[in-house]
Length: 199
Image (cartoon, rainbow, N blue to C red; front, side, top):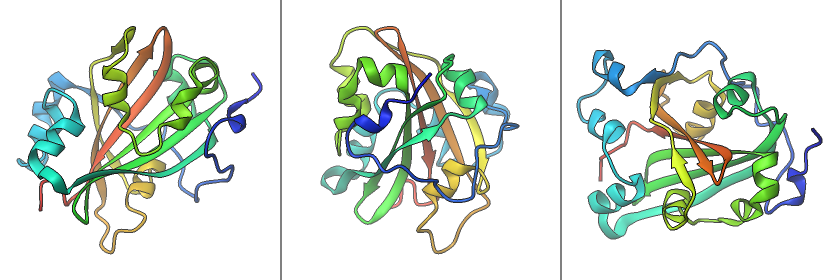
């Protein structure tokens, strides 16, 4: 399928560094999360219910902000295509940061296959708006159960999340979910940074 993503929105076409998606990462369902070792303060954020942006606003108050970091056309990896259940070869990648003051708490990445973007071109025009809050206002939206994984710094999305970090941890905990927007798929991934919960 030919990529039409370059027609949409604020897109930069380029290769994003040397890191690549690691196909061997094992994403775990929620029922396995209790068996995984992680910081106690992080677990409630990973498994909590409700919109993440709303929970962050409650914790951070007026210091909360969400900003668009980057948006570009990229190739979908085999793992992307598998979880999205799409045959598209490319799509729109949208990176955002959710911050409390100057601290980045969460790095979010949305992946929108070309076929989804063709039917919903407004997804490329969100700017600094929160995707979850926007989708919450629409009908015909379904979200899968979250899956969880520890993503090493060699993973492409982790490298992007830590690009400005002075001290880089070995990896970050993340969760992902497949969203069906009126029958078309997109993928959201949220990575929780070491400053999570710190004001």
